[in-house]
Image 1 (spheres, rainbow over the protein chains, first blue to last red):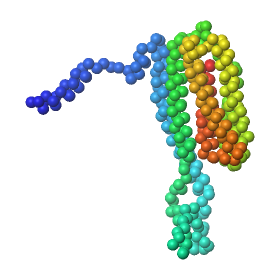
Image 2: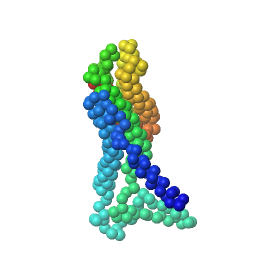
Image 3: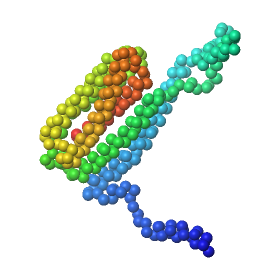
Length: 103
Length: 197
């Protein structure tokens, strides 16, 4: 019996909360303007401040993509033509990551 | 004792591990994003207050802002930004070649702040203070916050200029300082349009 009451209590609390709630605006001041122009200013500033972070994130991602593509283009132009290199002729290409081990 | 050289050839098609941006630039970009939100919130609050006041702004009895003189000052700051961009491009070729452009950017930035201070003295004499009303409060808050950022940028430019003269200017430092100064320069026309016009 106690378990049944304990299980029903959250449901009863949720139903009670749903009964007393009223529709509200997400912007607490947008609904109480002095005039139409002020209400438009509230709504406009809310939209502006909501979209600005998304625009900045998009700009940073776009700048990173642009930079990556530019680096890839530079790497493609700087890379030696491997297809024309004769296999086995001449010294082996030495990369920057060469390591020397002493025994 | 034998020395063995191990050659590590990159695999075909594997991407080069070249950093897209330095840590200084990434950190500065995140900081600038936060500052943009700060100024956007100030501008939004000012816009609502201005529209709520009705059609007349500044309110009656409050001094008018020096629109023309500040427009000329805006041109000075934009010229400073252009000089900074030129300094960055020259520094990509050789660090020592950026000294003159850095000095010009520094001088123009300092002139902007000095002219802003001169303008403030005149407005204070006319009675526009932080306590004279929302006009004065928002003006000194928004323009003062930008002036503080400009002073910080001038300090960064002065350090970059001194390092360039002594041949110790690092590209990462210059890239961070350039990004910050471009933010200060490009922010000002938006604030001028919002506050002065």
